[in-house]
Amino acid sequence: KKEVFVPRTDTPVGLYVCGVTVYDFSHIGHARAYVAFDVLYRYLLSRGYSVVYCRNFTDVDDKILARATEQGVPPLELTERFIGEFHADVLALGCLPPTVEPKVTENIDNIIKMIGTIIDNDHAYAVDGDVYFNVPSLDGYGNLSGRKMDDNRAGERVQVDDRKQNSADFALWKSAKEGELSWESPWGPGRPGWHIECSAMSDSVLGPVIDIHGGGADLVFPHHENELAQSRAACDHAHVRYWMHNGFVTIDSEKMSKSLGNFFTIREVLKQYHPTSLRWLLLNTQYRSPINYSQRGLEESSERVFYLYQAVSDISEVLVAAAEGAPSTTTGSTTPEAWELRSEVGRSLADDLNTPLAVAALYAAVQSANSLVHSKAGRKAGDRLPRLVALLRELQNTLDLLGLPSPPPTQEWTAPSLAAQMMATGSGVLGELRMQALVRVGLTDEYIQDSIASRMQARQDKDYDKADKVRIELEESGVVLLDTPQGTTWRPVPKFQK
Image (tube, rainbow, N blue to C red; front, side, top):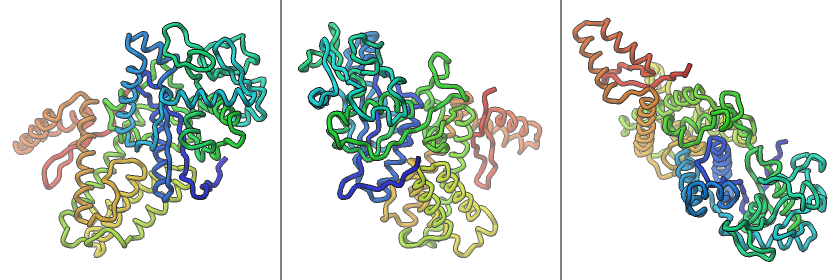
């Protein structure tokens, strides 16, 4: 259910989001989560909150050890590589870096200390070098996920161990197998279980109370249920004030799975599509709802992003050309269109991060701006320039709030300097979108320019059949030619797979 967020007094907002296990490239399910919580982080900052955003790295677990053995590299060398790859992916997607990114391997002492406290509080027990959480010992276990005790299983990444006192008990500490990466502990050499890491790291960074805890819906049980249990077992007043879980990702309406051959990493997607197109696709579904990832969706998102940044470029071009007539600064004034954009985006994001409505408001503002730029009535409007300045400034703020490419908002921009920066941003995104569209259809910019020249020559020779043939062949490939007073240019159009 939705609840009104009430911050604690004189305390920064503590935001904890479960991070990735770094043994491979991150997939689009990860992109969905981290884009959603990046918007939350940006929104909280925009409202003036001081925020400590903590997102961890799991850099030791069974999958990491298995992959390191398979590749013949030290586990920590493998994890450092994929931490770097993850950072590259989320940076490309426009995500701000968190305040803190703790690693499991750098928090072993904190983890061992918390496990010891849980044992001392009679909520865990040691057996043969392993430590297990005693699930029935904690009242309220299962309240987060709504599961009854009889429904619970171990929730571990290994098979059930018959040494456990209860089938639902889960590992806090795992004894090391011969040759495995391990650390000394009161129970012998070993490494942390899956869930304890987040309890210990969130406590060390944010304390026993977390304001907002985020993650995928797949983590509600067992991970978040067990994480909450551990924290409560270690400290009786530990709790999470607000939980936020993003919905699942399906691929063409099927569950994403390597076995089904529909598993895509962020890196694979970004080889063919602009990161802004992927982010736009993700923003167009409210974070709690399931999202269907498809080639059609990405093509449509790419078209909409092209339209958006073409408008940004056109608005900016008008203001740069009319720099003498534009207001000297973008601060201190607004217009109905700009105010409507600000108000709608604010209302939408305040309502449980309703990004689809925020995107719709952005699109409506772009349509208003396009009317001022291109329509006869808009060009003759006496207040055209101040309205465009106000719209451009609010577009800049909205783009930044949604994590879409824009120069950083500042009160110091004058209208001409803002327009110049936005024009550069728009032109850059449009160029990148064109180049990636060519990659998808297997053409080159040289081929496009040669085709434009060939069509121009055919028209000069009055060979209109040949000129039309060039145009039609390009359209069938996903390229539409645009004749303007400045010459012929082109834009990509969606090309759907059959």
